[in-house]
Amino acid sequence: MTDAVLPAALEVRPPKQQRSREAWNRVLDAGVAILEDAGYDAFTIAALCERAAVAPTAIYARTTSKDALFLAVYEHGIGRLRAEQGVFADGDRWAGLAPADLVRAAVGETVGISLRHQRFLKAIVLLSAAHEEVQRRGDRYARELGDGFTAVVLRAGEAIAHPEPEAAVRSCFGTVFAATMIRVAYGPAFATPSPLDDDAFVAHLGETAVRYLLAHAPG
Image 1 (spheres, rainbow, N blue to C red):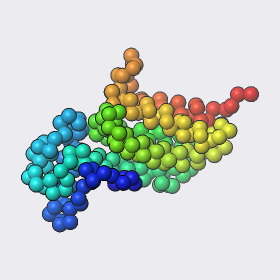
Image 2 (image 1 turned 90 degrees about the horizontal axis):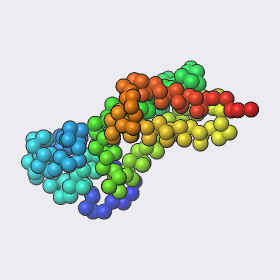
Image 3 (image 1 turned 180 degrees about the vertical axis):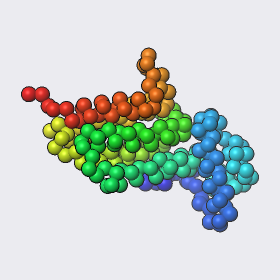
Image 4 (image 1 turned 60 degrees about the vertical axis):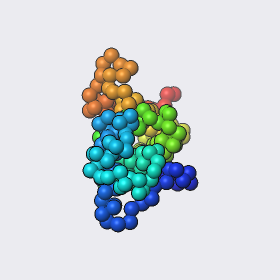
């Protein structure tokens, strides 16, 4: 759900009966799968009904707007990514790590979430430039992810060689996130003659972050 007031056309009426909830969850799962397999152009009510094995009334009982349906599917898919962000609040995951290892691990977790869901994210990222509400929600999600990353990396304390550590960490996140979204949207061969596999991509971003955040300031 969003924290803004939505127009009535974008509202979804939640199901109340158990059977209706199960059908609606199948619709949401089907919507995510359609986006993963074929992108937004394939996202139609007919395709959703066929894939979820539900009658159109199961959808029209919730909303008559394709855009509202899409946004419900969007939130369902993003919810899967949000569930993985709990790693940033897991103190045991980060306890005892040396600063460089902490930064590399934070980059690895951040990028890993996106890569594990890259088929879904590709459809979302490509659509967001032309869809104001998707762009707004994507911005909010990215900020949440950045907050988690920043809280973890700031554990490195004085090892962060910048006069404004939080600003530096957030700038670092912006670079990591942007590079990841370009890869998700356009593939590993985009804008490079030497594509990297996922592991090498994560490792290179991790080293870039370490060198930026932990390098000793000149002079």
